[in-house]
Length: 215
Ligand code: TYD
Image (spheres, rainbow, N blue to C red):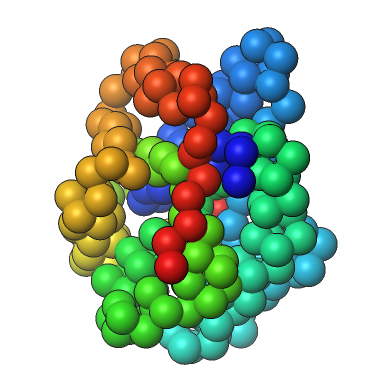
């Protein structure tokens, strides 16, 4: 596929949403037509699933939660991300498969090999060319979230130990795939982060061979 697929990952309050907006603006100024999307969500069907997932009650159990995430992902990838990449567009996705490995795997304790298989089924092996991991301590991230009143979702309310496990798993995933991941210190200023994000994206934009398939 000719487009570039960039996923944004990180814990709560890592500032990744701000960076997605800034990157999209920069790409547009350069004449690109980026597709900005998010998970869970990004299509009418997946946004409905998002509502079920993030509402306070009734809360799904861990297995129902992951199956809803996977269902939402399958719809987003097939109807939106693949066509955009096929048209040569840059796709910026706020969360993707690594969120499932970190939150449902490390956070909820579901078996990682099962999640890897389900991710593969939902995406048909579509892996980002670049994953930007906004690494933030749960302490700082949750404090930022608390300041942004009214933005806490059901998963934000999990105990700090849950968010510690999520962070640790993200860092393990990044270590295992250094070519795909760029780890950013989310405690940096928005301007510093914007510069680092652009450096990583610009490197991969030139050849524009970002999306690769894993069999
Ligand atoms: P959102 O409010 O978009 O959080 P953030 O701004 O931190 O991205 O809510 C998405 C929530 O869904 C977030 O808490 C992480 C969670 N999530 C999973 O647990 N598993 C997944 O596979 C995905 C995509 C998200």
